[in-house]
Image (cartoon, rainbow, N blue to C red):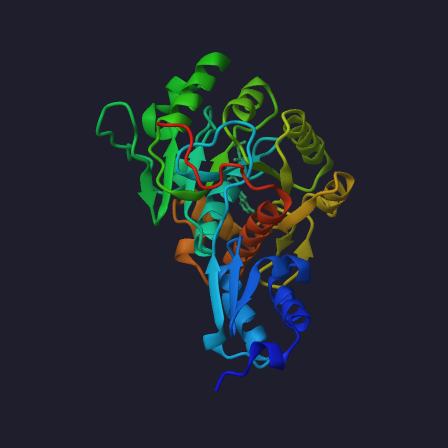
Length: 352
Ligand SMILES: Nc1ncnc2c1ncn2[C@@H]1O[C@H](COP(=O)(O)OP(=O)(O)OP(=O)(O)O)[C@@H](O)[C@H]1O
């Protein structure tokens, strides 16, 4: 027999207990709740399916019955400087100042991890001179179809929809494009893809902080950016340039993901900081932003990425997948709580 919500506990205690299971403040949790009769209705604004069980359990330990808890997730569209893309609530750019730090592998795994956390996700490979998303998704020969010869239907890969310049032109063609031509191609691919309803569109940005990256940041309605870096000084210096670039165009940076943070020997368990240690944390502190997560240098990440078998799909229970799931939740959470709602939250914008 369910107990009365009001009698059993004061709501402060409920909020405090539940908030800690989600890693948010009681005040943030309180904003997600309202009590209707004897039911606690919770609407979470971020993707965290892996935590739903813990949340319900934490409420049950306080004496609430499962039938008294109504839980749903509703990811809002957040404000952008440019009009939003039709059907796409939020666009998150994954960028790195330096090449080769694992930006594409992180983008792909982040996309699948957000999906596993319950979000609808798309992936756009904007790395025009070195598109690696088709390989990492395991469909390099695929081509987006078109029903009207103008718009492209993105490719579906285990539920994540994707488009890339790599599906459209042979790699040797794109490498000789000059800046304006590359920017135009990117603009086309962003605007002429028929994205379905998405909570997040992840953009794998080209490496660096030159003209093409700046143009992209100015012409695509980005909601926020995430910076991928490795911990050594030379990468951090470039990551700083990346942060500065987004600051310049007023795009909020949600935080840093430190990739290749350490190497853990599978045989003896010894941890080696191949590319130095503590760099990501220091940079995050300097810029007052979150360190969203740290990923090891691990052969499984490379094998799954380069072999076109997304880690979270083929090894969902692995420790590495769990790291990506935690990072995805951090990204989704920090977007939910740090950026204002779009004024047109419920309306769809630019026509395609
Ligand atoms: N944490 C990791 N552990 C092991 N290998 C990794 C890790 N992250 C990425 N890699 C591998 O390192 C290589 C470079 O990664 P990736 O292509 O993602 O880098 P990038 O920053 O996008 O590069 P580019 O500058 O060319 O766009 C790939 O072979 C990838 O599978």
